[in-house]
Image (tube, rainbow, N blue to C red):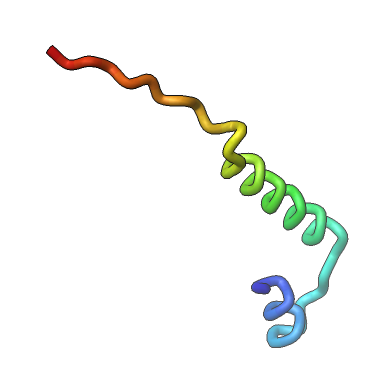
Length: 47
């Protein structure tokens, strides 16, 4: 969204590395938020 705003409003150039960087960031977010990757917390008895 911000890349498109920069291209349209500020007339900046869009290069291939902007697209690749966006894909890497989105893949990282998806990988970090997947349920399978979350560590399981063990319940401890207190006392």
